[in-house]
Length: 558
RNA sequence: UGUCGGGUCGUCUAAAGGCUAAGAUCUCUGACUUUGACUCAGGAGAUAUAGGUUCGAGUCCUAUCCCGACAACCA
Image (cartoon, rainbow, N blue to C red; front, side, top):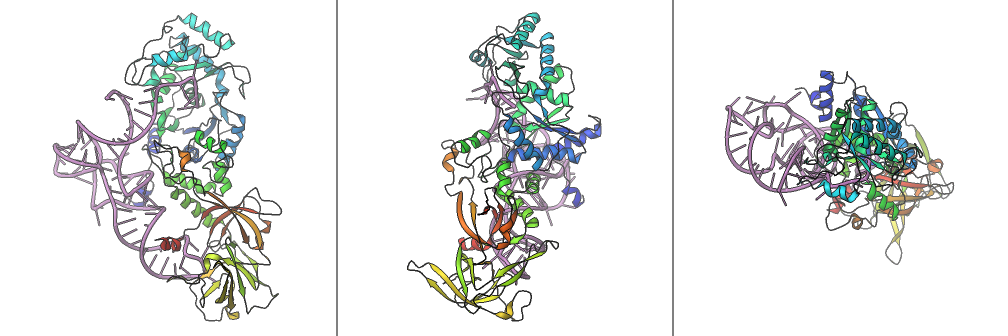
């Protein structure tokens, strides 16, 4: 077997598709769909599903529908429709034609329900919710038949029509499929197909007061749209017999439902309900808080669509439940940002450095390459002067072995500028270093270095009189526990990291003055940052997207 | 104690009865470096258990163990 064949190994869904292609099961078509319910913001778990569905269609020259599963007007809102469309587009995918809605099919769905009634496969049940629940039984024991199960077709038809007309109160009657009350699969025990909901629907207005349940609407919608492979998550596996029963019984086109494992991420929660609580209780600042695993949060954080798509590829597709390490996501983010971001200088924890032999008032424009890994990225200049800010961590009075930054008597290169030697430093009464003194070597200027000096360390800096003061928001993981959701005796809220957000003031080079919201940069030796929409004319706000890998501090920590 | 699904390096994914179980990430070593980044080179690290079939088993069979899903007029 050749190497590239190994690389091209198929996941189990691709195997199914290629098999279907071979046997011409769907006339060579591949048609998937992404079916969100418009009741919340999309998160990284949805992103995986989006990448799988759209990705499969791209790979096999097929199509993908975006279809909103809007069958429950009491829980859904148009507000979410726009955010979902934006997120899918931002991820870089295009759905086929206009987006679809399950509600587009309410008329057809109603007709199919009538067909089931006429053919003796559905009935109106007058039982209360409690009674239906009780008669359903438990998984280990069969349920019992509803006393309304054997109504005549005529009576069922009449009742269903009157349900539609709004003659009955909410909760008084439902339409149920007549399948098997003793099935070991609870979903086959005469599942409810329609319920009465006196709710205004965002798209159909007040036309309906009965609404189809997920199982009824979803499979038939797939059928109507000609979907070939209906991909969902593992928990819908038990729904598959019903999915198949409906289309088969109605004698309409039958797509196949394929279940895959949902994405779980370490140190992260992924349920809409739990994320909503974080927002409502103000543990975070909204759905697009950069600490949120929502697509809008990650976008604001500075993650890129390519990074998320690559991450989804690395996670893969399988049927076993898994928890993916967030480190894999962070790797994908760094990988993409490393390719595309300009390198700039920003000092996050400043300490003053005075170049004592540099003329007061003198300013030199130093040339800086924007991105060494991008030959077309060009260069810029940054002003250099006698007084600079450097990173507090880049100086140690009493350094450990192999510390190649500044310390008394030691030399470092100031990136894009001169080699300096530390001559002195000043401490305040608490022992905190307040000022560092150094001398520079005029022959060591970057690009024209004739000094012959070799130094091991290079540090970043900004010129104090020219520096731009900005706000920087540093983020750490939102939860301290690897599985915030995996403890029986503790709630995920208890694992919230109290230090997940730190707001600091920092100094950045003047070229950043014109940066716009969404701009992404690498602060050299620190990490990737992007400009937050909270930025104003007076003050730029940067979000820390992700830090650079840092082997030095890792070693020190040991 | 029902039905269905699932158990391969710490993590995610490969290997369709056949070479020393592969790759990515994480981690460790080293090289390079005007970013302790990137890049490059190398190391460590897994078939849940017990039987069986077979010349040969991660893969097939049996049993056991472990994990998950299912009892909404939610999706």
